[in-house]
Image (cartoon, rainbow, N blue to C red; front, side, top):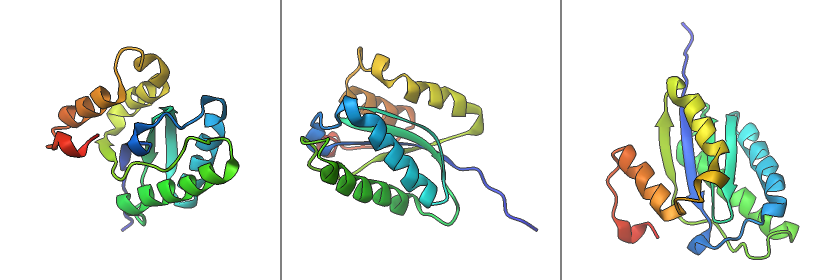
Length: 148
């Protein structure tokens, strides 16, 4: 018998100290680079977008890849790339942690729309407010002193 799975994660992480270090003029280059890292891990990227201080991605996680290793690979390799390009002079690194929220196939299109709408969304809610809301919506216990 074959094994089947479908595991979507809405992943969110920010820049170190929430600095606005992702230059909007070059963010598409960063997103293409991250897409390559996702593909290298045999995962499927469904949506990627962000703001100068954080990114969101929705990815189907391949069963051969652990979530923590997947995110570590994205963050480590993109951090090196961001520093090497010279296009992101304010970038010093990614935050230590991340948020990962599972998503059903039924909710996939809604999450894709949410990620696509980041620029408009953040006109009314900052990253801290958004992150805390996501944690609360997913009933994840947290200590605010470790968030920001």
